[in-house]
Image (cartoon, rainbow, N blue to C red; front, side, top):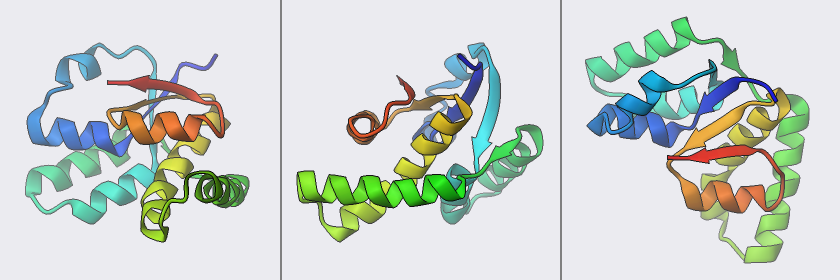
Length: 135
């Protein structure tokens, strides 16, 4: 088992809004890596100087992991299965796509994915196993 850790977007959003995970983040044991997908999601919504500064620090201080070609192709296959099994709308599948990519990237690198988005990631794990920690 690797000691790599990837934080999902939801943890950083919670952190930026309320700092509710500060003690857990400070106490984390392992090598933190940042998903390029998470960074893209965060940059899309960053408006305040503190948020922009946080993102720049995140990029500078933690190596960035990017989904591979295989991850992209597999994400489409998984989303097709989810659509067939659960009947989700195109909008819901679009919303899930980045989460599937984050999960597959974590799996590829043997990283533990930490999220506060229990529902979506536990559902994704029904289709591909990966190490998940829900805060």
